[in-house]
Length: 381
Ligand SMILES: NC(=O)c1ccc[n+]([C@@H]2O[C@H](COP(=O)([O-])OP(=O)(O)OC[C@H]3O[C@@H](n4cnc5c(N)ncnc54)[C@H](O)[C@@H]3O)[C@@H](O)[C@H]2O)c1
Image (cartoon, rainbow, N blue to C red):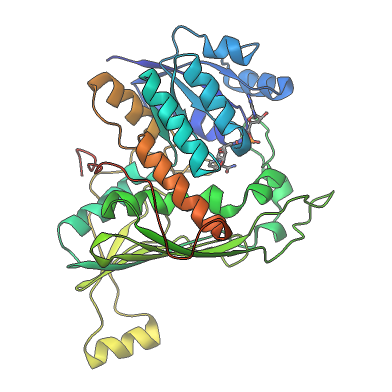
């Protein structure tokens, strides 16, 4: 099998999750890693036994690097992705592609001009659970889809023991960055990518975002705490509307529900590729409405997954295959076909995310500028 060489830039918290998924991908070969923090680089490379580069230039000049995987902090995504493009590399970047639509579009244009590819995380859209739900929508299981309720409430993170969240190679969870970038920039993509794949480009966004708990227990206090709550109404073609909530204050809830004329499809955990997809008929009879009111309804049917999720289960193991997007990009380059998470798609997701986190920058209900070509489902779905 042909294997694509990849280089990781950024050896922080998430880099361990990527590294743990490497064994799932015969088509990828990790050639080396780099981090601008020498201690972090040594800890990561030492733990995993990987080759460490001495500089970003050396990493980007690696002749065997088919793809550079940008796992740096969010505020560095733009400069690192641009440097990699200028070094002639294809890039897969952690989300978001950039912090503004304008910067995201600049990267896309630069990549196109250079004949290079960019793709961006998250890639849970390519997961078994998301593909099963999407297939059920396509097959008309709920009739015409009308409404989506997507929640990415992550619990009251600042009251949790986040100082003790440590990755496999010893990196503490970067709390300050997370609180200053904001949960919407960090998380909205997990729902937006699936929405956009199913319903096409968002047409209009009406959003509200607010900082609800300014003191997150950090010492010193945060200089620029970001909104920790946002809610957006996103309108798609054919009248489909999605309400997406992001927070790190409300109780943990990662449900994704698609409501159609003939029922509701539900994933309980967007961050688990093996999360079952459930289907519920609308409660119309007296008995069904009574059951819904008193017990949450009759038990839903569990749909058979489009394919068995290959991720091994167990404590400390990721529930998402973080490298699936990189593998998709590598395969798309080898096959000379569009990548399902390509640059236009990533720019669109970045734009909608910016509109959700910074509604003050846009008119309410404002039209979304960016668009992308239709995305095809995975061949096994
Ligand atoms: N923390 C999570 O649970 C999580 C989960 C999914 C995705 N992500 C995403 O992963 C990305 C990284 O997050 P993280 O949690 O690993 O952060 P982190 O702070 O733990 O790691 C980022 C690493 O990048 C390095 N870095 C920054 N700028 C660099 C540069 N110019 N050159 C080389 N190295 C550089 C830093 O030194 C640091 O070690 C973010 O985009 C985040 O949204 C994080």
